[in-house]
Image (cartoon, rainbow over all chains, first blue to last red; front, side):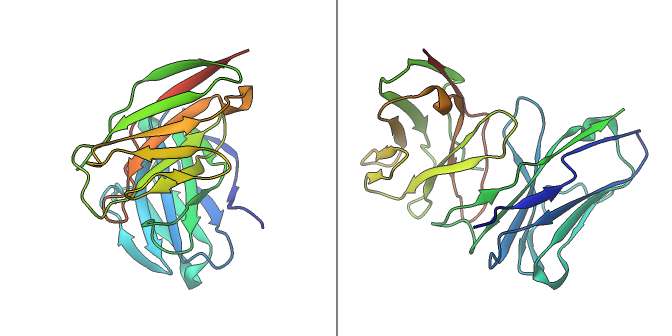
Length: 115
Length: 108
């Protein structure tokens, strides 16, 4: 079974630039998550989709971050404009249904460095 | 938010059992307890989860206290490949909250 695919693996941008990350979840997984992981910390949930609808985006900084999941499959996460504190690994995960009593599969992440 | 607490780090010798503790005193009666681990430069990887009774799979065992205020992840024979950060998570109604986890070092 193919895993969660993310691209790019690494990205370096200057502050105030924009950047986008792409995620392809496991086929058939209705739930998709984006997490931000700052060095030395556990992942923090940014947004959760169920099919193409948003379930939870309470911790997404909406003034600069946006995410979409068109057609309920692939998803993109965008940052515009980027700040130095956005330097982190951005992880995408998917599960067959919500996380209750099920396993979530994570991609390898995109490491973003803002200089 | 309900939270879990874990030791920051633990050490184990190779081929010995490892018991990783977690306190989740505010977890509700319907919240599952999940364990994930994260190897260097990788995304988190599912280990095991349970609700009330002890659970076993090919990777580990999960022992859940009768009052559900704590649990222990058991690796029966640690290998060098088990060196990782281990996260204990309560699902709090379909919303994973990761703490800083326990960094497990395995000594040869």
